[in-house]
Image (cartoon, rainbow, N blue to C red; front, side):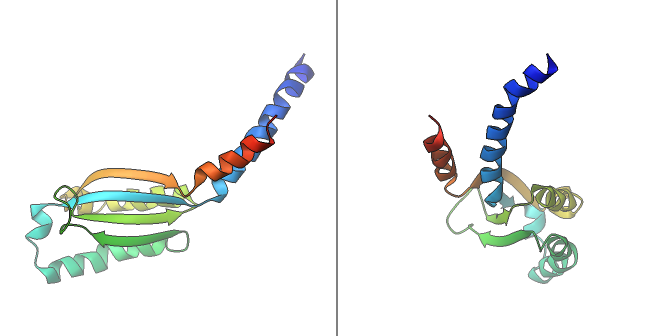
Length: 137
């Protein structure tokens, strides 16, 4: 009976591995939408720079080999989101580490920024699925 069950599920497991491996090879793009709080804005520009250099840059450095970080300003164009980060990674564990370490700082703690949303996706992921579906008959 066990052999029959294994033989039944083996093709499904192989298909899932093929599908999942194609998906995992592509990097994840993660947008973290934030809004600066009055606590952040009340700091002088020098105080902000010192905080960023001492508290945030070292965290980015710890995941720098696997997580690419871009910081963007949007306060000129959006009333709800003043800043956002674009992260790119194939290593979601390092991404989670980055977020946990930021949670241990005043970015989340005071908070200096309110996290409005986190959006994660993979570029042109539909193409991988289209290729998988082409081979299905």
